[in-house]
Each structure stands twice: as C-alpha cells, then as structure tokens.
Image 1 (cartoon, helix red, strand yellow):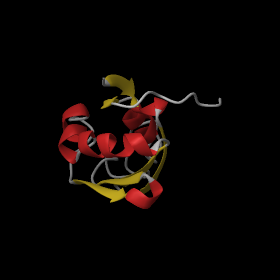
Image 2: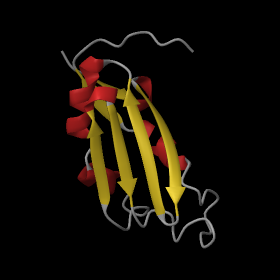
Image 3: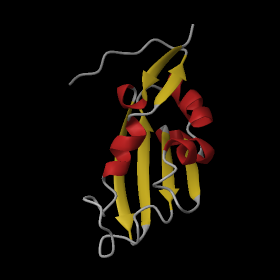
Length: 114
C-alpha cells in the first residue's frame, strides 16, 4: 500500500548557489524510498511546481550509493545575489521548497529523531 508524504519527512536537503545557478542536494534516509523519489522528482515536475522561478534548464543527477540527488537549476536566481530583488538571492530557499513536495512511497516511514 502506498501513501503520499512530504519529501521533508523522508529526506534532508542542502542548497547552494553560484551566480545565477542554484544547486540542491537531497539525501533520502531510507534506502527503500530512494527509487520512488528518483522516479517522481524529475526536471519536468520541478518546472511544473515552480514555473515562475525556474527560467533555465534543470538537471538531476542520481547518486545511488549515497541515496542522493544533485539538482542543478540554471537561471533560477534572477541573475544571482548581486542582481536579484528577492529576499534570498543565494538560493538557500530552494532546499525548503523542494522538501515541501509530496512523493508516494510504499514502505512505512521510520520514526525520525528530532
């Protein structure tokens, strides 16, 4: 039986930037969830979820041995920290935006220590 969960319930993320490019690394905690997240978190999905923010190409690189994804979003920071009128021209908000997305997983969730 599958269920929908927020990505933040099964993963961690870290974001960074370089110029007008934002880079988000996502690590899936449970190996049983990695394949499902990899199938559902695609460049097309990110473009559908954030159409006003993503103006350039989106690349997702799988890091299976780390249960990770490296998401590279070009032209995602309105020119970068020195040109942007956004509150967060560094791109750190991207990890929070991505972790709020829902994914469907088959395995039960393990309890996280908080």
